[in-house]
Length: 183
Image 1 (cartoon, rainbow, N blue to C red):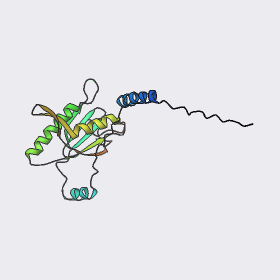
Image 2: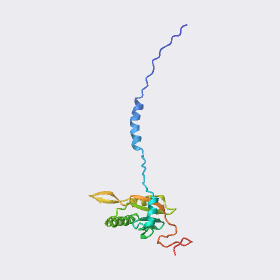
Image 3: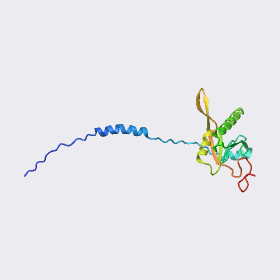
């Protein structure tokens, strides 16, 4: 008995409908995908050698600080000497616009003195919210200006250094008592 092997023709795969689905599905998925943006803030660390030599000779009278308090902001120039206190708005939010206006005025005054100042120190309390810290850094780095009918980012103080705010100073500049309240 001979077995006849019947030769079956191989079935062809019809992938036309699958390819049509992929041609439509891939662009739709790519267009609906949310691309994440990673923004890097370039922070400058203070130079210890420069600080040591500057403190021995004479303190820098152009050092600019922004201190973040729960009650608002304090702009110091020179370091530790209050130039202006900016209380929170009535809504309870920080007043970033006034901070920007004051820093623009400081930048203009320094430009009149032929000082090209690019650095600023942002001092924050330990319980400062992350978003507040980032918003302050964005505010001190640049501001919106209109040039030739276009809105552009004008430079303020792009070299930002971070530090801890002194814990013994209140928003109004008075030394804090041991109970934490101003005298």
